[in-house]
Image (cartoon, rainbow, N blue to C red; front, top):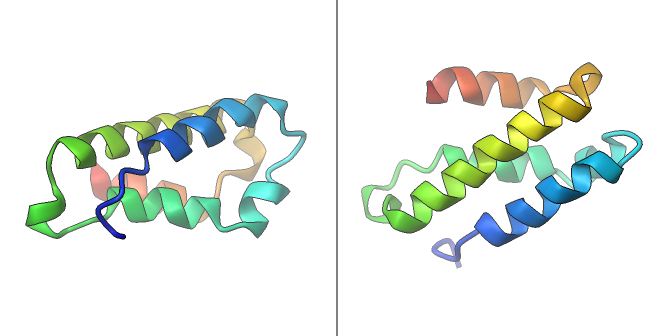
Length: 85
């Protein structure tokens, strides 16, 4: 189950961000945790084309969040982006 690509789900959630009035629905469903888990995978066998696509979508999701909801950036996003860089 861990090897299932998450890019389509992240793309869908990213495209919904502009239509959300606030971040409460994302926070209550632990979406920031899902996004950061995609970026923090350490297992070498899981890093490949699927991981790169998932990571790209996760970073796009974080960028979209910062653009549309800058007042409510989860701390986990900031920590993950700093560690990822």
